[in-house]
Amino acid sequence: MKNYRSKILILITVLNLGSETAFGLQQDQIQTDKVDKDSTTLPKPYATESKVNHSNVIGWVEGKMPIAPSGFKVMRFADGFNNPRWIYMAPNGDLFISESSTSPNSANQITVLRDSDKDGKYDVREIFLSNQNKPFGMLVLGNYFYVANTDALMRYPYKEGQKNISETGTKILDLPAGGYNNHWTRNIITSPDGKKILISVGSGSNNGENGMDKEIRRANILEINPDGSGEKVYASGLRNPVGMQYYPGSNALWTAVNERDELGDELVPDYITSVKRDGFYGWPYAYFGKNEDPRMKGQRPDLVQKTLIPDVNLGAHTASLGMAFYAHKTFPTTYHNGVFVGQHGSWNRSELVGYKVIFVPFKDGKPSGKPVDFLTGFIDDPKKSRVHGRPVGVVVIGDGSLLVADDVSNVIWQVSVAK
Image (tube, rainbow, N blue to C red; front, side):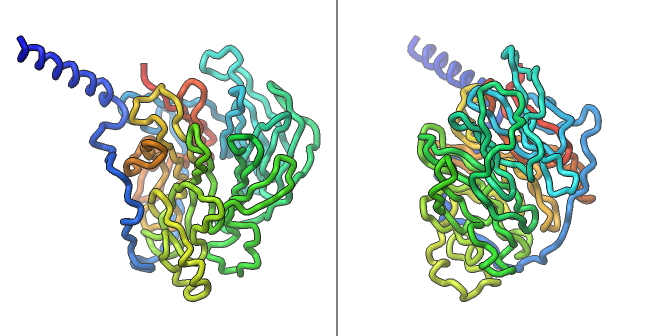
């Protein structure tokens, strides 16, 4: 009888494990050993030729869409946008989409989507705010709606549930405009206590080639008071920090950083990292720790020695921009408190890389495994550098599903658990 009970317990355990890994990432796909960031081995600069290889976007034909792991479904959540670059979910669940680009025909507007009857589908779609200058980051804080344009932080009076804003708003902070390789985006988030606003500002060059006097207040995360006063540099040496979020339930700030180009196919890796106040992360003098950039050799050995090693290597030229921690319970436990990262894709690599959403598992507030693919299928033909779309902004919404902004195909994709 004892042996029989043991067999039953083993069978139940196997079945339970099977139900957990029957969809989503299999347990053997995620290495859950401690991630040793100090052990990252990088090739030497110029180990391979630096190549220009821009992708050709063909869009999505009917019936074609990105691919998620088994057990998930992908659907068009919304389309018909004009370069939907970023998605922000307000405290009341409203979704704000910034539509902007470097094109002369940039929409320069923000659209709001609302699910009034809470059936999982939006039933309100309005142009919330227009006549902006390359808007990107958005934030509701107190009775204000903030918009981070490429050259300024704007603040507008706001009431929950508003469908549009017609006021001119107030410019509370000038921001450095322009930028190499589309470093025009400015993201904003609030500190957990709501007392500070953080602003990400990318560099104005690849590796400081225009002179560091042109990089004042750039390649930084800035910190201000909600009225625009009291500006400080929170962290520096971050070439293009775009995604920013606090780890769920903590004061630990994380960011996704798009690193420099023209050192070869495998340099320099993009990364996500926890951000230390007053920390220096290398740009433009060093990368991934004390690896000196040969183009800046000998210029600032003091800063090379100060350079912090980022937490997770996401691969060179992947254009890792969007990030969203998964603080819900709808997806399998494998995903709980891990982070999704939108990789916009390469232009400076002999073969395309990125063009997908990846997932990094976390445990106890720290990365617990290597990045794995989550949403793929954006690359159509790698030999012809042909792609369907380019994922960028990612956000987890109230029902626990993941939204992904595909800015060149003007679609927002939704990934949810298949029922």
